[in-house]
Length: 339
Image 1 (spheres, helix red, strand yellow):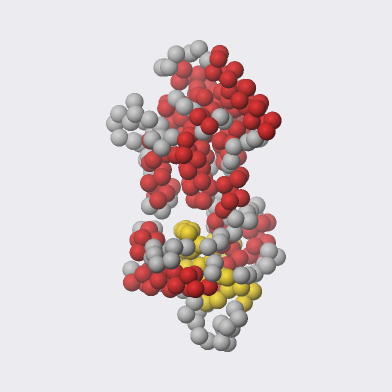
Image 2 (spheres, rainbow, N blue to C red):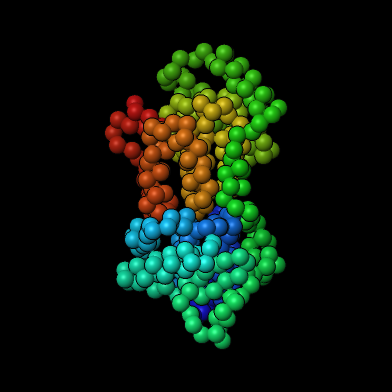
């Protein structure tokens, strides 16, 4: 029932691939899971896929409602990742979690995947689902590893954060309020009042210059004044400017912070531009949870945003950035909107 021989190595979202964490037991797997997701899951099914001893895929899904079974859909998604084995962890009430873990594990095994771990985590304790050996699986379960567990400590040492829950992650990119909101509204009105460049080549060139200037400032200082944030938000509504910023997005960690700040600050109508850039940067970094939340903000404001719709399909299919070499859209369509 233990992990496969040797240690698995987990590369966490946003980590340097050379920085890895050894996972040698089921308890270690439970301890590292919040850092793979960026938050502590609840009422969830988590699948951790591996190739050899390397974690290559992580996905979280809400527990299915009573009477529902999402195992076929989840298994199909996992099977497309090219993993060799998949651990299944369920977090939440005993009966629905055990049922969901067993159903998903059985479906994965029918698809030819190894399922070395089937774990239930309930009320601060954990059990191996289906194990009746009291020597390794006591009826009362085992305590969930504490925050001082060596695996959790190693993740924290390498700069990882596990927020209390998904709601805390949503809050991290929520719109600013109070005085910052008032200042941002005033700055946006001023930008819109004085922006007299007609749409077209000159406006796009001005937008490109704004993107470059903001990147340079943020990479050095880690923050933006409100007027620059407002100008950037407005310019990103231009499809060519959005694409320009998208094409410049690389794996520098500060880009996640930049697009988080801009997404939180801009007025609602301008949210889709920076939110989709945040989602893309997070997807590149392997942080699917943050990508999903950022994308939801963009789609809430503009359900027809073309690039948001494309990225939404990629995330729903569990496709990683490394699997996609070219995001060029069909002729006549830019990533933002129809030409």
